[in-house]
Length: 241
Image 1 (cartoon, rainbow, N blue to C red):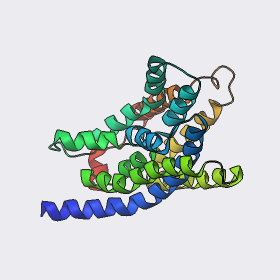
Image 2: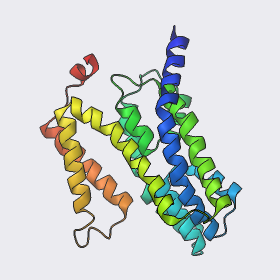
Image 3: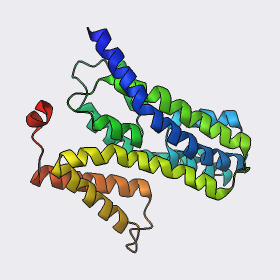
Image 4: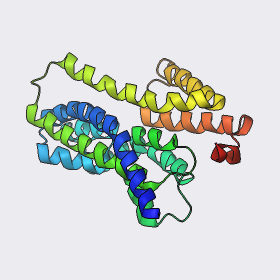
């Protein structure tokens, strides 16, 4: 019975991972172009993508490498740029069953991205780890091969086409959060406030110059903390739904 449930969750994850993988293929292609510009090979870029699974983190890594930065600087910048994944992992740890083995938790944490998190956190009730495994089975290869293809093909595609391809990923991410917002007014309010404050953080003098990774962490903790105190979601009712 458990094996059947895991297989069903894995297949559902594969289905949800297809649009994520296609979006990653386009976005990673642009990263591959950046990697080629700084002298990184297709194999090296693919290994970096498999190790990071983070667009901002990889762009920073490629840029710093091209600028001749040291390892310590690169590590510190990666910690800042990708620290938000700690918050995502903490949130997902509340969704998975308490008896989930450590090795499954580690795999989930390794493959967490913004889009996989968005799809996983929107699952009603407890999250079967195999749902994340299914998404990662499609999304991760899309990200890895997309980066390698960007290096191989170089700058052969016009810049406006590459930019247009990356828009699909944002549309897919909206498809993850909008349905959840339509079901719950509190979540909808969180989404709206998040959009507004995120925009404000890009135009307010002094704040707009702060690293995007730091801004994401601060806004996430601030917004989630305020809504948790003043508009908490009843966990029992949520699980019943």
